[in-house]
Image (cartoon, rainbow, N blue to C red):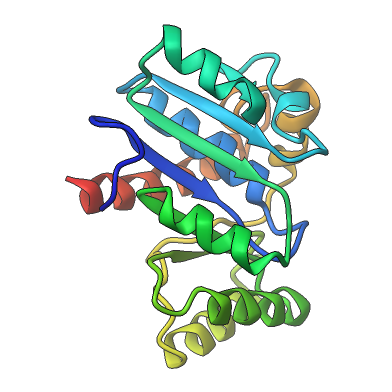
Length: 205
């Protein structure tokens, strides 16, 4: 994998469509990595979704415009870049070039999957991995059908997925990781990201 800085891993979370869990994924993967290393979450979304939810996070969140100055005085082991939804192909390819791992979250609904396939087409020849997010309860086959469709089209896919949980909404409102929310399902939601983080950790070793 290509490194942005020597000794640093850069993970970028991107895609053509909004509302598919990009910021939630960036925030929680940064939380996972922060348990064993220094991490900074870089906000590159004008909506500042991550910044507006950063009050109680266990790592710093900075704007992309502040990264150069921040890097002069700090040497975090990992950078997580949270990007805005954009159909700018050149921008997306540049992001893929400049990171160690490009993650494309998608919910399993038709509109999101259609946008994902357009994103994947723009990234032909580049390295990335798809993460299924906001997956409905087990009695629904939407996530399984989406996984089968993605696999049939040879898209690289995380083995684990993120289930839909009200606890994620509460975490945003409280400015904390979902594991720190007082909710009976909060730790279950957190463990979904832990499993994805474990996959990443194995891949980059």
